[in-house]
Amino acid sequence: MNTSDGAFVIGSFGKPLQSKQHRQQIPHMKVGNFTLKNTVSVTTPSDFSRIGAELLNHGIMTIDYVNESFYFNPNSEIKEFNFNESLLGFSRTLMSNKSVVGYIWEESLKNKLHYRDEIIEINRTNISNLSPCEFLMKNTYPKGQKPFNIIFKSSDGVPFSLKIEFDSIKK
Image (cartoon, rainbow, N blue to C red; front, side, top):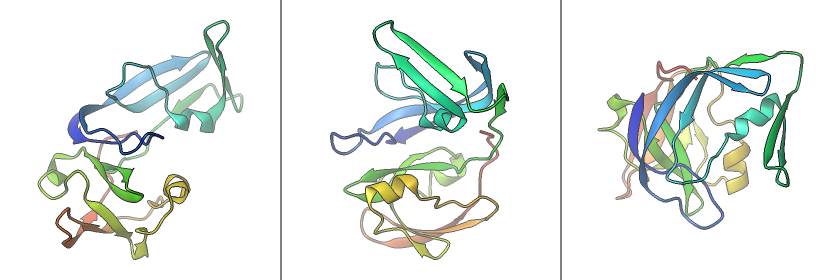
């Protein structure tokens, strides 16, 4: 689907590592008796398997280290979930406690945005002073609002604004 050079993973060991990654759509994936459709996955530079935390919104995950097993129990009787929401053409990460551009996925944004451009404001809401916890928990891209008027600050300190809509890649 898309390839980008940047960073996304937020870890406890400092700033995220810059690397080339891919955003891929998985049309059909089964986790136990639960089916996920149109899931979007981003590769990582790690050799260790990872599963997205968004799966926790749909059930209870249990990791049995002793028996080296993984279990997933859906929250309801629904045995299928279709991730059919549009995505933004870039992802964000934290660097030095600031919200910054991580990966730029959409080709039309690659000549406008750069890895580490700071995200200052989204639709007149200043997000430059969000704590790391607020960054992770706050819904800064409310559904139904489009386009997003976003003010960035480039690495040389110059602010610029872009109108960005969700891209056509379905989640």
